[in-house]
Amino acid sequence: MKRSYVSELKPGQKVLLKGRVHEIRNLAKIYFILLRDITGIVQCVVKDNAIDLHNLNLESVVEIIGKTKKSLVKAEFSRKDIEIEVSEINILDIADKLPIHVNEKTTSTSFDKRLDYRSLDLRKPKISAIFKIQSTLINGFREFFYNQSFIEIQPPGIIATSTEGGTDLFEVKYFDKKAYLAQSPQLYKQLMAISLEKVFSTGSLWRAEKHDTTKHLNEIRQMDIECAFIDDMEVMDLLGQVVQYMVKKIIRECPKELSLLDLSLEVPKIKYLTYSKAIELVSKEGISIKEGDDFEPEAERKICSLFPNTLIFTYDWPLELKPFYIWPKDKEKGISGGFDALFGGVEISSGGQRVHIPEILEKQLISKKLNPKDFSWYIDAFRYGSPIHSGWSIGLERFTMALLKLPNIREATLFPRDRNRLIP
Image 1 (tube, rainbow, N blue to C red):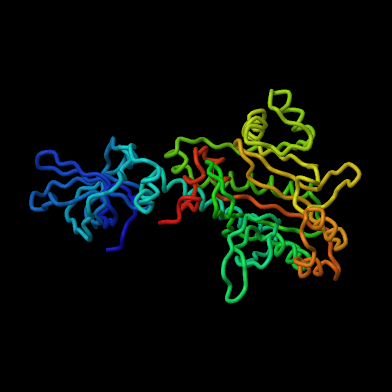
Image 2: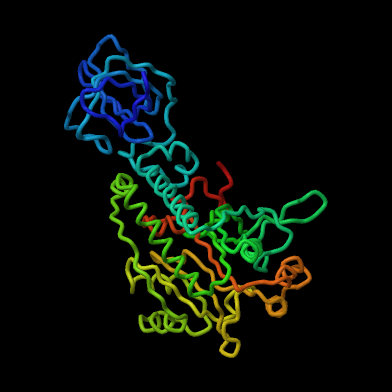
């Protein structure tokens, strides 16, 4: 008999189900088992006294043969319309006593302990819902840019030179040389854009910053694009379009998961603010900030509170606050072609128009106290005919956290890597 899944069940079927024991109750001579598979939970009723289930533990793996019938099940998370009359149970693997709760009726487990047993934690319907949504989100990102004729690239994860300067890199031994884990695909995606015109990538990045906050990690996943022949304003438009596309896809394809998380999403609006205008707005709201300052978390939250459910672009940032590869939009005024994108109280993206002229690149590297000789392979690539180009990156976990209103970025990360956690 072919395996059936919980989400596919209809009344009056003979079915073979495979899954885990989510909950079990023994009432006199009747057992009620909540069976969970990847698609949902269904109540199974066992009336045959010949089936001994006394040793069956939660999370044990079983297969059940039975018949579906209409029901009005009241169990949390399970299907309300269907239950199974069980004729046969085969126990495939008995689970040991669980170190953390999985059925979500008890929520006393600490977050750290949940992460210690992450593979168990991920079996909870609400937790798995986060990652089903995240999977849909990154799939929507790829889908959008494939439809826009972008080419997917795979930049290296081991590099010889810092991408953005500073010391926030993890050093690794690379045979007899010193190398680093990539903190960004920035320089490589630029070289691809000036050759292939429209590129995107998704992948892991590493930053050795000693943060200990709810929105920072030392290993992250990023969704990047780079595109030739467009400026900072045009590439912002692409970011707005793909965010709206991804959210529409989640609303359309993940109603069950959104319901589990008690969320009702709407497609975000788009707002453009110059850096100066954003400074003015938050200053009027009592935030201590002035021209030339970067945005602290309090300022980011305040801007987002002024424009609910809105992707907010702050652009025309001061040159001094942006990396060396950002285009000097107005040298006299010290304005760059760089921008940040805020959503849900946090920065989810940064980007801008890039420098495509070698002489300007060299000057900006020196201004950031970096040695152009260390970047000669990168600078030289722009000597052979280079169009203007722009790009950005979205932090996958950061965006997931903001979109789903999660309290901690680690909730949106399968196996978080931070200052204190390297396992599992």
